[in-house]
Amino acid sequence: MHAKKMQQRKQKNHLFKNLSFFMTLITITVLFLLLYDVFKDGIGWLNWNFLTSYPSRFPEQAGIKSALVGSLWMISLTMPIAIPIGVMTAIYLEEYSPENRLTTFIRVNIANLAGVPSIVFGILGLTIFVRTLGLGRSVLAGSLTMALLILPIIIVASQEAIRSVPNSLRDASYALGATRWQTIRYTVLPASLPSILTGIILATSRAIGETAPLIMIGALTYIAFLPSGPLDSFTVLPIQIFNWTSRPNADFHGLAAAGIIVLLAVLLFLNTTAILLRNKYQRRLND
Amino acid sequence: MLLSIKDLSVSYGKNQALKNINLDIEPNTVTAIIGPSGCGKSTFLRSLNRLTELTPNTTTRGSINYKEHNIYEMDPMEVRYHIGMVFQKPNPFPKSIYENVAFGPKLNGYDNNLQEIVEESLKKADLWLEVKDRLKDNAYTLSGGQQQRLCIARSLAVKPDILLMDEPTSALDPLSTAKIEDLMTTLKEHYTIIIVTHNMQQAGRVADNVAFFLNGELIEYGSSEKIFTKPFDKRTEDYITGRFG
Image (cartoon, rainbow over all chains, first blue to last red; front, side, top):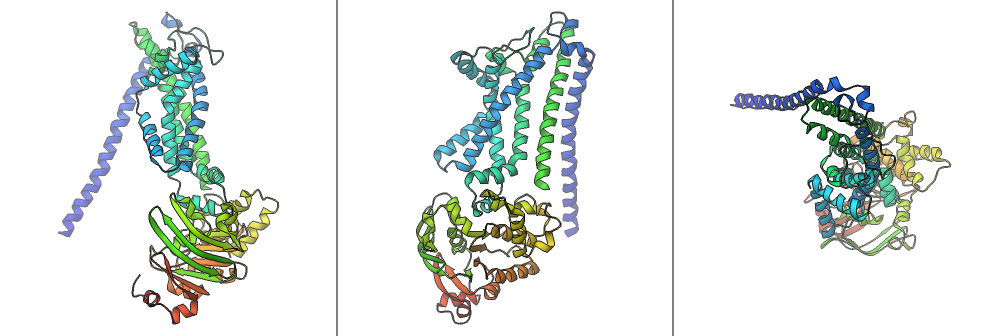
């Protein structure tokens, strides 16, 4: 009887390990198929010329320069807007706000915002930034819209991170005579920073890959110049890719695949930087 | 009288945790707070350095006079400089041993002889010899007992008068417990200690005075000898002889 139960438990134990391995395998296979497909089509088009040319009607002359620079412009304006607002909102909600219905209402709504379709943020951006504030179809309007879109992601991730800091650490800090700000600055933030950075990494990836809200606010699909300031018009990588894939000429599909490789490379670079930063802080915490 | 508690009542929302506590603490003594779980011991201890305020919806009535000043009319940060606290579970910061001890003095912008303060505090907490060559190591590399003594050193570094200890040895092995009990006896020369404990033997070993709490009320307060040999109240006797709790 006992031996039989034991046998069953062992089997279940084994089964679950194999099941989770199989699921992981599915994910990896799909990923590799995608990558294989993209690289097969795109690698032939990927060369220095592709990176340094503007888009063109002729596939051989077309490049991704304006979209690449536009994406970098957009992300370098979006993150400095979204990160401080997001992290500080999370700090307020977790450390300062009184426990009442209004706070709960705000929390629930922010969590909900994270699930609102991105096109809705595009409409909001078009109304507020492009028209009302008169920013036009500029990088700045795009970045502000994108910042709104990723704010809930940053806030929710930072809230989780701050909440996971044990209260015993806050107690220790207060008991030594620390003010609330000192407790946040020297105890809560250092302990939650690695998880906050993880949230920021996810948000950055989202911002780089998003297309719909930028199409909505009118980022152009054909641009043969580089933005020289935040008020210039622009395009971004996913829009350029989208544009190429919708052309009938098969050569443009190759260009789109090459564009995807560039997008993945940019994403990989930004994420690696963020992860290295996170590991540095984590190491400092564990030393 | 170093600390004089008058008509202290604390409630969390509608739930009254402490009812009209009156208690005087003499300087350079160890006072043990005993009583069954949920009797208000920890709330009492946390109200002495105003940590209770961190819990939302807490109301406090009555007064606690520290050297003739009501701490509830002082700045809470200032109160906590004079009245330090060591917690149930060792809670060092995820920083180096040195930074843990220097944390308190640094908060107040103190930095001229930090090194000296760190060394002195670690010596007082009887930890210096074990860590003097590894001050840069993370505090989490220490054993549980060492971590708790580090927390004591961290509290001492801001030069308090009173040290509150909330079941400081309940997470420790007997050897580490003995070390901390010995430490209390030496620290008593310069500090006043108030300790919450579940352990009757511990209260008997370290305390000069004992206060017995039950359901948020102070049932009996007197010298350790009297409480453990001739308790005045039947309920105290029942508790210390292990008939309930």
